[in-house]
Image 1: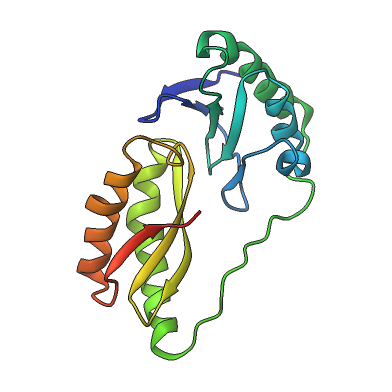
Image 2 (image 1 turned 135 degrees about the vertical axis):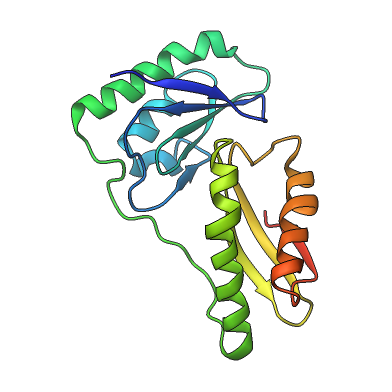
Length: 187
């Protein structure tokens, strides 16, 4: 098995491409070892000294290293070994099913949310996946027009994430969905 690596715009995140599907049921992110307990691969990656976060995309794995810890040259061999061991073992990515909790919308707000999610899925998420990240819908406030999004993987904590949200995503959303007045990052 050959695993390629790619840098991301976030210098603390490296993208690993195993050449096969990773998160078949949708992207998953773990920010702590406790969160990763539902994933054999997630647990293995957090055992590598210096790993601070793990994101599983459709066909990639983004790993975030600690700010003041080991360098990528020191971490990379352990991460590559964990990924290889996982795929050779045949274990599932997740022991259980990850769930997403979004508010239900009705009427015009439901139509606006559907449009927002369509644009995220067709235009935004494929672009940020190229850099090892993901952007997900969190909530929409119909009264104010504010759209809240969650940045994951290489996008979370990236120095250019504010520019991506404001200059890129906000402008696109306001163009295609005029009811959106502003885009903010959900914490």
